[in-house]
Length: 253
Image (cartoon, rainbow, N blue to C red; front, top):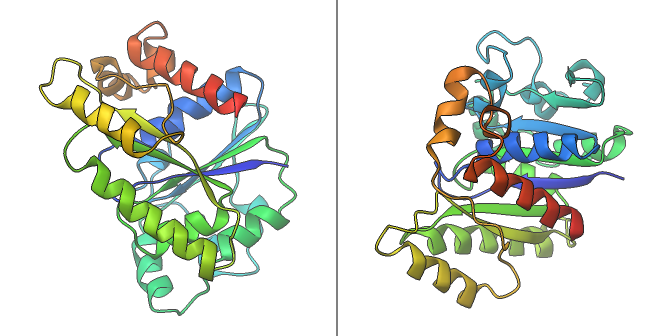
């Protein structure tokens, strides 16, 4: 039975796609079978994996809009044991249709649970904000991983996601959804307030914080320019080592 994790935060630019790519790669290195799911209209995950979100024939949009669309028609292989469900720019239209109640929000949940997936982990890259697409991703998930930058607005984004998770648990048919951990990202120990924000997060979210902290590391930003992710581009860099540590934490929980 796959563990389905939504990588989510109200804020953009906190490292959601970077976390999906690098965590997924490390889990695969540890012999886990991994499925990546792109649920973001920006489709950054899909672009990185080599597909054009403007030209793709079938995507997670197809899955959300067409109840008879089988997963097998959308799955793209990533090596021998891993795969991904690409996103497309059409997901922007899906946000509107789902938000207006024109399509049910639980189609991704149904597809992942009834698709007889032979994966150990499913990592869902959600869109920024708490729109209908993000809710669809949270409905589909067992767990939520919350990347957050260590700045003043970090707690606001986490609290907003916590409120949505509470509503999903109580009113939307996913009572077991839980936050598996909050992941500090882009941490710069030289920044004046970053250590204080990190300490505040630990104080306000006891038991919810990953011990792993992803540091600010230029290798993470440089790697995509070479068509790689940090754990392959600079495997001994602080950022890459942090994602290895994150995978170990996740496997131990």
